[in-house]
Amino acid sequence: MKLVRFGQLPSVLAFCSLAACAWVLITEIGSFRDAVGSWARRDLLARTQLAADSLAEAVATGDFRRIRDFGDGCRREGVRLTILSSPGGVVYDSATQVFGKHAGRPEVESAISTGVGMALRKSETTDEEMLFCARRTGEFVIRLGLPAARVYAPFQRARTGLVLAGLVGAFSIFLAFLFTNRLIARIRERERLLAEMKREERFRREFIANLTHEFKTPLTGILGAVDLLGDGTNVTPENRHTLLELLRHETIRLNSLVQEMLVLSHLEEDQLAKHFTFAPADLSEVLKAVAARLRQKADAAHVRLSVDAALPLVVPCDVQRMETAITNLVENALRYSGSPDVVLSLSSRDGKAVVAVEDHGVGIPQEHRERIFERFYRVDKDRSRELGGTGLGLAIVKHVARLHKGTATLLPVRGGGCRFELAIPMT
Image (cartoon, rainbow, N blue to C red):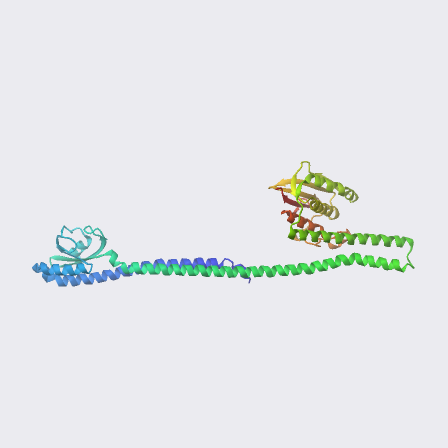
């Protein structure tokens, strides 16, 4: 199975990996925050129990010196100590000298009713987020409070590390994605080059075989006629005339093949060197000139050749090569289409001048349309050679179109026939 089928695989894997990293990061951060909060609650609950046990006697006897000493120690540790009476009145608070009623605080209410209470809320006294734990001891309530920032400080530090680790992981995945993508691109390019080399090699072999056959056919006829004429013993005047006509026909055919090969070679060289001679030209006049030159050939083939180019259309082009391309299209229709009429037309479409040659003949099957512009490619090889074609005319049309930065296309005609279009930019 070719690797190119998995062209989207690196993108999918990278997306899935990043999504998985993000999901793990989010869930683990949440889990760690919950774990830190749970640990802090257990620790604060134990410390509150310890404080209640340590201060039970001092609170009961009113030993405020001992209470203050314990409160100062809590303050140094960053812990707020509050002692309240059962109705909720503040007896002592290490965070403030102004006491008030705390009866409505949820942790205090829970401690008064159940013996212990805990709440994470904003303190109305210090105006900061606090984690409170309260425990009842006798007629009093001992409450410890920790700032939420202190409670979740380990989580904040760990979250920063996890986020950095996630970013590093994401960046690593991104680098792996880029590397994989580049590797696949290189493999694709090598496969493309290999396929191109195979196509070129196949084309080279076909070209050499076709060229050899195209030269061999007229040369065989010429050599045979020369041998018979050279013998001279059994050649009647009528046979001599026939052989001379054969020599003339095959020589003309060979000369046409050589000339078109030279034209095609020059076009390919011009495509590399860009030596086209561009000048503004009225394509309607070019079409009329081509039709006038081929009128006699059309009449001999009993084909009605008409031109639909009433309006002038001036475009920059190489007139000589455009005439060659249009002539090849018309001759191709006259020679092979079998149509009683051929229409040579000119129009503009999407900023391009479109020269069209349309017939209503036998048409070209779908399987041959993609290769019809290749050198020596013929739909019916025997019929093409019988009619004297070289197999290079449409290849020349394709090169002329490309050198004008245009296109040469074949379109089917409803009811049968073909429409060849040569489109070039008008600017």
